[in-house]
Structures are given as C-alpha cells and as structure tokens.
Amino acid sequence: FCNMSKNKFDVVVIGSGPGGYVCAIRLAQLGFKTAIIEKYNSLGGTCLNVGCIPSKSLLDSSHHYDDVLKNVMNHGIEINGEIKLNFSKMIERKNSVVNQTVKGIDYLMDKNKISVFYGKASFVDNNSINIDGKEKLKFDKCIIATGSKPISLPFVKLDKERIITSTEALSLKEVPKHLVIIGGGVIGLELGQVYKRLGSEVSVIEYAEKITPFMDQDISKELLKVLKKQKINFFLSHEVYEVERNGDSVNIKAKNKNGDIVNFDSDYCLVSVGRKPYTEGLGLENVNVETEKSGKIIIDNHFKTSAENIYAIGDVVNGPMLAHKAEEEGIAVAEILNGQKPHIDYNLIPNVIYTWPEVSSVGKTEQQLNKEEVNYKVGKFPMRALGRSRASSDLDGFVKIIADKKSDEILGVHIIGARAADLIVEGVTAMEFRASCEDISIMSHPHPTYSEAMKEAALSALDNRPLHI
Ligand code: FAD
Image (cartoon, rainbow, N blue to C red; front, side, top):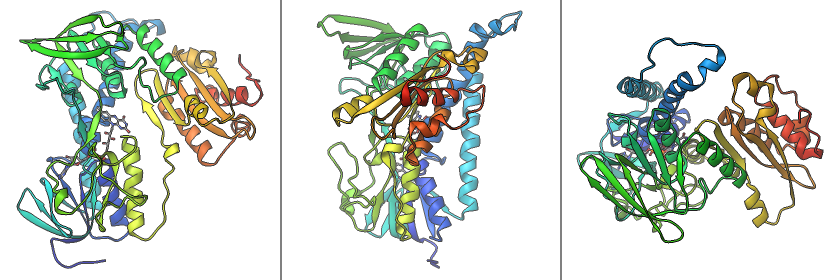
C-alpha cells in the first residue's frame, strides 16, 4: 500500500473521536498509509473532550463528595471539621483527566505512524480534501467520522452561559443553585446527579411520561424511583414552551398534561434533548454523499456512502450514539477495506447510564419482545439480597434476565444497581455465545460479588429456584 508522495494517503479519516481514531489505528495495523484530520486542537472527539470521560470524571468526584457527606459515617468514619467542596479543583481534576487521556491518543497515533492533521476538513472532489481551505490531501478511500453535536429546541436560544448544553455543564464556574434540565435522557440524568450531589436543587422536565423510554420499563421505573429518593425533582409529561434569560436567572415555562402552565425559576438551564449528526462545512455536496433529512449520512451494510470510495461511521450514521458502537464500526470498516468480512451484531451493543446506581442493558426489552410476539420468561433478583450489597450498603436495584420460554436462550439482560456498567459484560458474553439461563446458573460466580445476582436471576428464570430469596 505504500505511497511515496507526502500528502497522498491510502485512507484519510475525518474526525478523531472513538470512531475515527480507532478506525485509523486498525487501518494502520492492516498496512494502510493513514491520515486523520481533526477540527479541534485535541484528539479524541466528543467522547474524550466533552462526553464520556469528563462526565464520568465529575460523576466519580461528586460521588466521593456525596459519600463523605452522607455515607462514610455509617462505616464508622468520623470527620471532625468542615467538609468543603472545592468545585474549581474538581473541574481542574476533570480537565487533567481529559488531558492525560487525549495525550494517550497522541501516543497511539505516533506509535501506529498515523499522520495527524489539525483543521477543518472539506471535500474538494472524490480524491482530495482541503484542510482549513489550504493544505490539500489526496486519498484513495475516505472515512467520515465527524460525530454529532447537541440539538436544542426551536424556541430556545442557547447562550452557553446560563442556557447551556452538556459541553458547558462540564465546565461551569460555580455550582448552580437551581439547575433545570430539559430532557430526561442519559446525559441529562448523569449531569443532574452530579449537580444534585454537589448541592444544587435539580429539576428534570421531560416531555414523555417516563425517563429513558428506550430502556426496559421495569428498569426506567426503578431508576425514577431511586433518583426521586435522591431528591431530584421530576416533571414528566411536561412540554417546555418558553425559556427566557433575565440577568443571572432563567425562567422556564412548561405545560403539564392538563394544559396547566408550570413555571420554573432557575439560575442555569441545561438543554439536553438529544444530539444530531455533524456534517457542517464538510462539502458533502462536492462528492455526492447523500444524507437523510435528519442529517445522518446514508450508508449501506458495509458503511459505504453514495460515493464509491467514501465511507461513514459512528454518531454521523444511523444507530445508537455510543462510543463503543463508533469503535466497533471503525474496526469493521477498516477490515472491510482490507477485504475481510467483519460483522457487528447491533442487538449486542450494551447501553449504560452511569448514575448511581448504574443502569445497563443488552439485547431485547420485554416491550420489544411483546411487539415481536415472542414467548419469553423473566428471572429477577434484587441486589439487596446479596451479601456484597449489604457489605457496601448499596442495596438498590435488581438484575433481570429475559429468556426464550422454550429454548431457554437469553434474549436480554437488564441491570440496575452498583457496578451495573461492568456487570453487563457477562450478559453480552452470554448472548454472544447464545448461552441459556441454565448455562449462567451452573457457572461459578465469585462470592461475595454483585455478579451473584446474575446467577440468581438465571436460576429464577430457569425454574423459579433462586437460592437466596
Ligand atoms: P465524535 O466523538 O463526536 O468525534 C467526531 C470528531 O470529528 C470531533 O472531534 C469533531 O471535532 C471532528 N470533526 C467534525 N467535523 C470535522 C471536520 N469537517 N474536519 C475535521 N474534524 C471534524 N457514549 C458512551 O458510549 N458512553 C458514555 O458514557 C457517554 N457519555 C457521554 C456523555 C456526554 C456528555 C456526551 C455528550 C456524549 C456521551 N457519549 C457516551 C456519546 C459519545 O461521546 C459519542 O457516541 C461518541 O463520541 C461518538 O464518536 P464519533 O467518533 O462518532 O464522534
């Protein structure tokens, strides 16, 4: 594949998020002369800079603070003296976690001899691309991995100071007194929990009658119950129709399902109603790459766009907007260019909410199986019945396994509880190998761990014979 010309590449990847940078690494491993172009001056995309990593950093820091305020005394730890929050230090730590992680990507690009270019990429024609309207790269193949950006409501003017998106919410200068969050999805709930723990009053306004509607309904009900117990206010079936800033305050008006007007006075309003594919300024019109009305780039089963040598992956195409989904697609498209036949089973891409308790799921929900008229059985086991949960005082939640009634094959695993994010991998592995509840139930699970709830839920689904309830 080697090419002598400096600015001519076998493959150019646009965007350095988890889709783009992982794709570039796999391409380089396979021997392609690879370049990556990034608009910002740091690699890693949304995920590393303003998404997964900074949000998890603040979730962890705020969890420690909350524990010190509310829980450690129950463990026999006494703190004499004032417990103080140093919010700017918390944000500084988050920034340093991001910087270290970004540096890791610089190292990986270097190690794999991937040429990195900074600036906005724009197609000139089907074999060349401009960077910031200047430098020109030539390519045989191009992968678009330009990701997504937050959307707003048509009547909301985001000023990015008081009326903000998740990006600003990750770098505030002060803890809000009252944070109103429009949208009860994953990002809103995670950031809501951060600020609740740090002392804000938090109100979540959601248009639908439930939060996280894509989750199994048992799980979203339990999550709502737990978050209400943590004193986050929820206003479900409320339609926001006005958001106005007056000085340092933001007034939000919504209508409830009876049509009554409900007023919210806040100092910060986080608009977290979803994200949209980002293709602005890419010059797609110059290469005839077609998009849906929603802005998503249209691809075939092999990630190929309507242009023969241009491919697209990650948030900019269809499917769940998740970092690990983008990564899988990055690997798959590189292998396709190498003549391999990779396969992604989208049913087995897990979903996680990093609130505490955490929430995770893989496979089908009960609601989906009902729609598909599949005969299924359910096994559930509460976390509070585990020795491990009592040892750590993390009692909320349960594991729910859904399996085919006749064959016993596991069709879905849904977890709410401590460390659910890590526990779900057992469900993914089981489903990848098409395991049954019986398979899980005869495997030894270490005691005492939260994973014992998996075995117990499998026993419950198998023939209603859990051991510890
Ligand atoms: P992105 O990460 O968005 O990267 C695209 C890159 O392309 C960007 O760096 C952009 O600057 C660059 N780019 C765009 N246009 C151009 C151009 N013309 N030229 C050059 N470069 C360009 N997902 C999870 O799986 N787990 C989580 O815990 C999680 N938490 C999240 C928390 C928040 C607050 C947010 C906002 C998102 C979170 N996500 C999470 C979603 C996750 O960040 C995205 O799904 C993921 O980053 C998508 O990867 P990507 O490579 O497709 O695009």
